[in-house]
Length: 118
Image: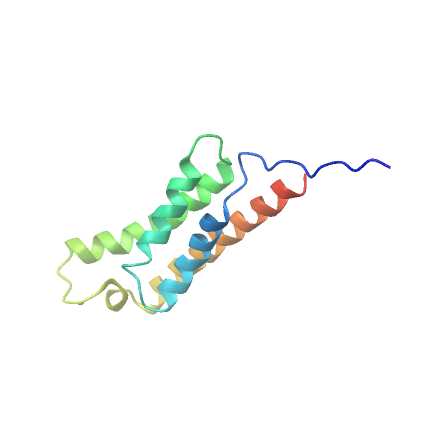
């Protein structure tokens, strides 16, 4: 009876830290840490752009980054009196950004699961 070793993860396999960052972004947005949520979003984007990564992860990460960059840019360049990004974003914008974050996190979770079960 021979046992075969588990397959080595492919280069598409997102690391656990990237997966945590992907889930942290929508949690931080909902928790009204909008400006700080840019840190995990940047981690997810950089990880997805690395050589050999899945195109699907690039698209999802790019969409999340765009969903974050639009209100951030509008807050920084506009005539807003809001003291923070979270206070600037209305409920719809917060929900859209959180939904983009959850979708990106699910995409990373699915790719991670598929790459470990090959």
